Image 1: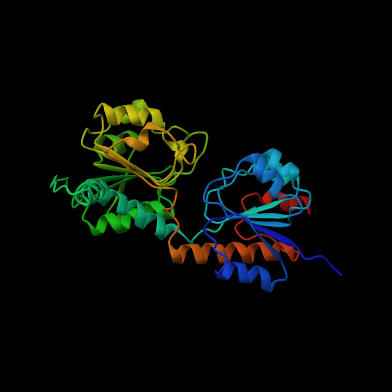
Image 2: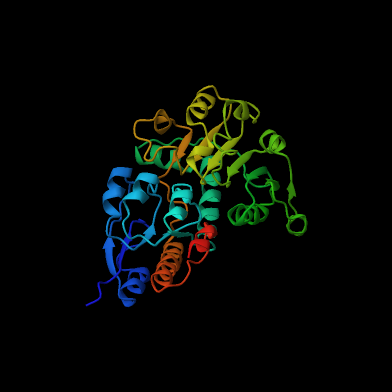
Length: 325
């Protein structure tokens, strides 16, 4: 009897009761549930991938040691759009197709990012905490309405934030190396240089991918150019921000506050950023709305099944792999 293909599900976004799991089972796959609220180590992942044919992936480590331990892996599909935790060169050399699930969570991230802006400005979290503790502190915060927002990265998520910001009649400055002037003109926003975005914005929100050029994009020098009343939001990748420089800037009141959903090391156990009153932190959940989880998980499962049936992964990020077929 032919052995069932084995599919490892590591994304915490995919719950056992959701359609993605049924898609895999209906296709005759054996589902191995490896969900974890915390990213797993390379050693853990190297053990987990042995005997696995496909992966519905989270943000786990798929470095060279992990991929080299995979003895029959054909496909990895990341639930989301980031794939910086996957060593694409090694994956390609081993004939492993790698895909993502674009178009499934951009609105969830945009909602969350804008929610963090509102929470920072109006001190919603600190008001909750003080009131729940029996205090009655009425500390005002600045408006969001008609202020200037700087959006770093104008892909699907950044554009979603821009649309929300226009609903608040905000002045929107966008930075991206790829510009769509017609779209910007229609929405009433404009592109600007990175220096201008950080100098002028009351709220800076990051939506850029992690690349060599964007690692530590927000460093001490960049933070020093911001207004002392400005706020920083990061729902993109933790490595975009020099976290120690951000702590120093907050302590010195170089900027007013920050909200972080992502960190260079997750979770950031023991880091001083966690104890700061002018900071909101969350556990890398911006893209995880109920609807986005279902859509992304289902797309990932369908893509894995397509490859296991001899096809190609949807939204492939290492197309060179097909030349090996």
